Length: 525
Image 1 (tube, rainbow, N blue to C red):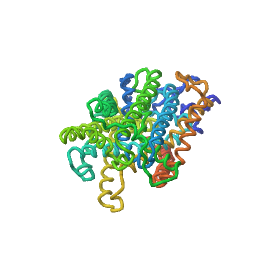
Image 2 (image 1 turned 180 degrees about the horizontal axis):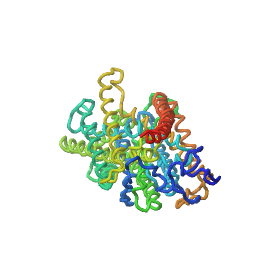
Image 3 (image 1 turned 30 degrees about the vertical axis):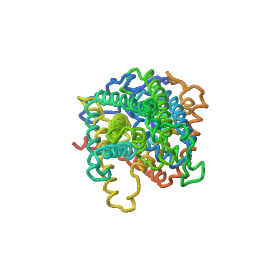
Image 4 (image 1 turned 120 degrees about the vertical axis):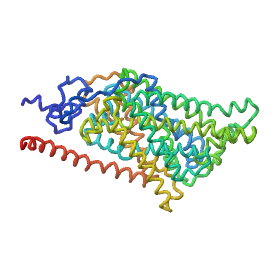
């Protein structure tokens, strides 16, 4: 074997002899890993695998970014943010900073996504920059808890809004059954075809983005009707939070804000199903984030102009409903009840769309792991008729339902959890664990520029290297303050992520043993 065959190809682990060792075809050194490179040797008896269908246009891609982000955060988090901060200036600064960080991340992910338009998104970027073990830890985190926790939290938020209208206990087993039924429905829709999931996403995104516009404009519309419930003087009201330290308060506010923005990169895992990804992925990322910033700032300006800081803190997870009650108070009880029912329906629609978007993007990570054969290869199979990663979607659906059921049982069985918010605990974990890998992904732009400057980059980060360095600095600070402010959630997240390392090496050793044993068994026959 020549020395050239021993050179490491992009996508291989350090220590592997060549791309051919994984059954990969040779490619020019100047090209990033191609789609064909991702297909490992097929299992015995399988002749071919259908590929994913490129059916998502730019509109659906933007809808995935906006729809993946607008879920429960903008509706359920403002009350907790007010209680943690007590200052409108701090709150507005946090929303602006969160949007700016997403823009920085969007610029970095645009370069990575246009260069590597592959199913798996962040998993692929981490693999190419830092190796398969690091990428596996991300996929493991998403597979084990990240996406199921997101889907579970969103389903619980849906049920909470439904309970506000239908007047039943949102903590009952029946409510948990409703959340589980919703998850199963969304799993079936996405198994049936990405085009159906994409159409659902586009439709729901239009509805909930339009609803946010109406929510932001509602106080001003009421003023035109003679209902003067909006007053800029309320921006000056304050609330004394439990924690006096400014840095700790700001860290807690940013944790809630980043949940509301979480998922801004949600289109990248379905890159193989986006038409003209080199153009449409950067467009979707940057355009979608810009839309989100405008919507979020508008809604916050409206909420804080109608309710005082103390009223928002007291409202908890029902700030939108309390805002509508205040605005429609002069129109009679019937109008008020109708308004509350409508805003609850908006929240249900919003969480419905976010669950669907997570169902679209999440399974593509475990699909990429299965296709790389660093995890169960069945996760990397494509349904022959629907051309979707059906096994990966089904597994994520099951794990989401198990998580909701377990949470409901714990709430009833453990008295110490009676006053705890499962929704907040789940979202805090998701944001912390996701940020661990966001910082590595942003840094991947710098690493890949250094290790593979010859790769074609249809989109380049402007202001390089200052922009990715700013992203690394923010996420480093953010992780530190989350650890100080929420040590339990942070430590649980670190333990669960770290648990993936022995799983990775044990599974790798098992596959090597299976590969050695198979020829011996054939010879014995």
